[in-house]
Image (cartoon, rainbow, N blue to C red; front, side, top):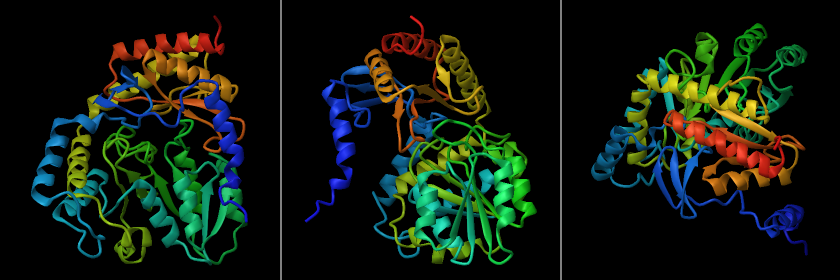
Length: 401
C-alpha cells in the first residue's frame, strides 16, 4: 500500500540535506520574546525584525492593547460560534463599522482570517456559468477560493494589461465575470497598474475585486490601498483585506457598495461555517483601524524607510526585484538556494531576521530574501540593517568583497 506521504519524499530529502549542512531551518524560527514591532529575542539574541508584515507597527500600540484587554475582561476569551448563530458580538459590529468608515463604503464583512475572506468571495460569487479572471501571480488564497467554487478560471500574465484585455475579449457573451487583482504582490513587492487594468475590466463589463492585504495603511491619501492611490475607488466592486498586516492582529474582511452584498453572509461557506473572531481580537482591530485614519506621519516614515533600504541595498550591489521602492516589501534576489540560505543565516547571526522564499512560493528557479519594513523602524535600525546586509552578502559571495 502506498504511503500517502511518499509524494513529499523529494522535498523531505531536500530539506534534510539543507539541515545537514548545519544551517538553521529558515521556516522554523521561534520568537522567544517580542520586544516591540521591530525587535525580538531569537535564540537568546536581540534581533531586528525585517521579516514581518507589521507595516504600521500597531501590535504594541497602547490604545490597541488596552482595547483588547478591556474586551477580554468584559466578553471573555471567545465566541464559540459562527457569525450567523451566536458568534456576533457588539465588537464584531463595531469592527465592521470601523471598516465602513475607513473605506467609505456601505458594507463590511469580517472573516476569521484574510485567507478566508478570499476563500469566501471567490468560492461564492461566481457559479459554473461564470468566469474568474485572475493574475497568474495571485495569492494562494485566491487560487484556493477558485478551486473551492465552480467558476471557470482564466489566468493572465502577471501585471499585463494587454493580456488581461485579450483574455477578456475571448470570453463568450454569456455568464458573469469577475476580475481579481492585488494592489501589492507580496512576493516581489511590485504593485499592479490598477488604473489601466480597471479600465480594461470595465470595458468588458466585468466586476472587479482588489486584494489590498499589503497596501492597506500606507497607500493613498487615506491609507486605503493602491486602488485609492490609482483613483479607481468608484469602479472597484469588492476590496478584500486582512488584519494581520497593517492592522496588527488577525482576521480578514471584504468591503463593498454593492446593494446585494449582505446576502453573502448567508451563502459564503467560509463565513457561515467558521467560529467568529474572539472579542479581544475585533476590539484591537477596530481601534487600530480607526487610528490608521490619522496615521499620516507613520505613512511618511514607512515610505522613507522603504526608499532608503531599497537604494542602500542596490548601492551595495544586491539584485533587487523592483527598479525602485514600490511598496514596503523589498525582495533581494539570490542566484540559488545555497546562496540564499547562506545570506539568510549570516543576517540572523548578526541579529537581522528576514524571510527566505523559494519555489513553489516563488516562480521556478527564484530564490529571494523578502524584507518587510515597518513604520517603527528607526533611522539607526535601517543603518544597521544595511551594514549587516553588506557583511552577509560578502560572506555569502553575492556582492563584491
